[in-house]
Length: 218
Ligand SMILES: [Zn+2]
Ligand SMILES: [Zn+2]
Image (cartoon, rainbow, N blue to C red; front, side, top):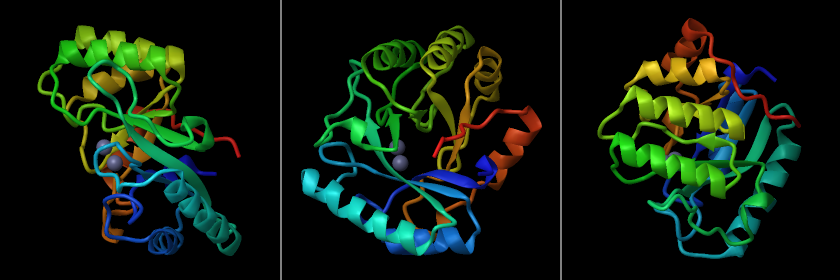
């Protein structure tokens, strides 16, 4: 798998996006992507639809059919989960272990100090794969906080997402994270079909900064 040809953060009509899972997969195949992460929000995370495990199971069955129909595309069964102010994750029916891919994201504005303390607690309490749009809701950034978070992400093996919906404001942090040994992932955070795989700037950043990408074992 060529990780540069992946988009590991995609929403569908199972949460707050306008495109169905089928449309998403067909678009990814048209774009010749190697891997996609279908990472809906599930109740009660922000942007989710009300429902329990049956929603997750319905989507999983659909993903199974699409994997058979399009064997060249790696389709990951994922979730984007809210990180709370105390570092805990919003609950997900059936737990996080059921997913191939878990993105943890902060969805409220916080400053640099708050961000670092939330992240340290979140990493201690939860096991997840990717920190979504790391600075999407950050009102300030200090390199000393960045260094603490980068070290903790590397220690826990959590990748830093390069988002095209929330392009990185501070490339210094990416450098810190890379030097601490973090991996990175590409995510469009798409909510409509046209945004899927639109990651040219993020791919260019990977190449320019020599950022190692997360390789998900099959
Ligand atoms: Zn998000
Ligand atoms: Zn998202």
